[in-house]
Image (cartoon, rainbow, N blue to C red):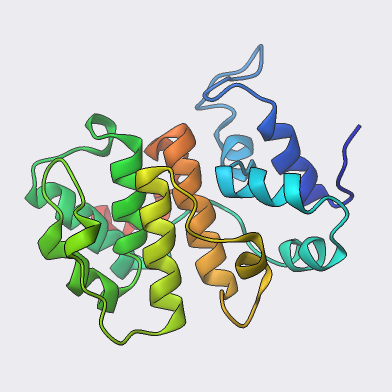
Amino acid sequence: MYFTETPNLQRIEQMMISIPYQIPRSSCFRCNGQNYHDQITTKLAMQILLDSFGSRKLEKRMKGIDMKPQFTSKQHYDRFTGFLKSMTLSPAHCSRNYVAAVFLLSSNSNLWEKAKPHINRAAVDFDKIKLGSVTTTIYTIFKAAKEVYTDKAEISVSEFCDCLLINDRTISNIFTAMLIENHGYRIVDTSMFEKKAKAV
């Protein structure tokens, strides 16, 4: 029995009660990868569901968003992977909070220019990142990155539901980062960009 009514939110709700990294019986990650990528779970999603059961406005908005965990663009992928390579780091050997924060900060080129100098091999120094005059989108991404890194709430449910404040692409990025935080980088579908890199 689910509290929510739409398939997208029911999948989130199902993941809320599942064990991280749990693979169904008679299956493996490789065989079950597509279904695994399609499942959505984040602390933010949990907060939204717990605080907004029955919210038609929320359900209506979530219905039309592509929640597949992936990079925004090839440029986003290159910024993220290029930075980790420059630090001789692998996502598998970094903390999930660190990887999730770098994923979000590198999703926007303007934000990345401000944040990159304050990220080292082990930490992100958010106190030293000076945003200056930025768009609401950049500010939201920054707050979300800080949230996944520190585990302290930065974005309210009302902000998350405001389509004028947070656009669909940003929501998708936030959900992907939260997935990384909870389940690790392997949840992200990088196949499209990896194929392009091999073809070059």
